[in-house]
Image (tube, rainbow, N blue to C red; front, side, top):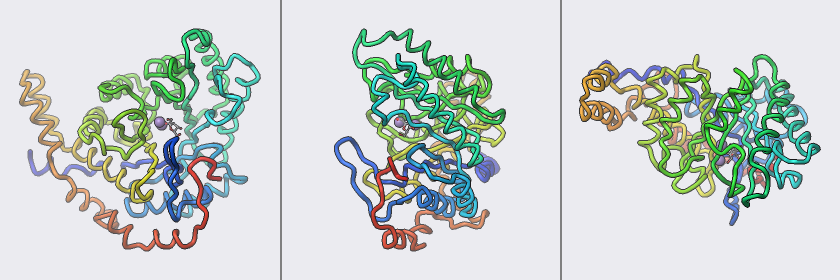
Length: 389
Ligand code: PSV
Ligand code: MN
Ligand code: MN
């Protein structure tokens, strides 16, 4: 590897990762939610924490909202507070998984009243986008069934297509609708948007403003995620990532923790398609919960993991890889990729941060800042991630 190649991670200077508001609140499993001193009591405090992550990493310029968890009376005020804190409000996530009406489905429910209610919730989220300046509506659909024969798979797809059309019709010209998929949970027999194929088909039927969200935790074990990434990029249908890592199911652990090599392989596909550049429009978001670790340092670690994987992907010697691939040099091609993966990029990233005027080591900078001690003493009675408003 040449010295020039070794230093060529400059594209990372403009590479931003969007953080989720819900990562800063208390969260847990269905067995227990542990509480952490200093967690935010309001959406404003969640934004303040996100801004702190951006301050020390220089790479987290936006924070996603989840409605109604982050409901406030005046979203313009929240957007202004975010701007004053150095960040912007990002994707608006809808929520159709916590209302009794949606037990048998929301956008797919056989009852037209319930479908209309779920559509109206999305139109309300679009109003939030107008107030915050966000351009992205993100929809994860929990709908599904538990038992064979419980409902018609086909009729549910037809209802879904119709509901999505109503939501899509409510978008402004510069808005995007990002449709997420997940293979199971909270239902265990069918899921109405279980995979990227289903999500893509609905996006194609809707039009250019609809794209797929790939949550890295939402696949069956063994799924080749980088293959999906490439297919979606080829169709200009990869709208965003929800980054996290999984050992078993939808674990929502720190991205790159379970399988840093998988994250590198994903970022290699991104970089080799030029999709890491801002022009691609792909929103690189985190979707994580920090159940047992401190939340702000957990987010900082996550940003650094994505940066490390991306830096390694940027170090792949593309010319040598191309030559080896075209020449049928199986092991040579593999070695080019592994050389980049096995490079220690921490020093290069430290240099990059210094060049942006921030500390080489975001973890140490946060520990020194006194922010954790301040929020622990000031914030009494912080909330669970859900219903954080
Ligand atoms: C669902 O599992 C999901 O990944 C969706 O992105 C939700 O919006 C998010 O988790 C938070 O619950
Ligand atoms: Mn997600
Ligand atoms: Mn998930």
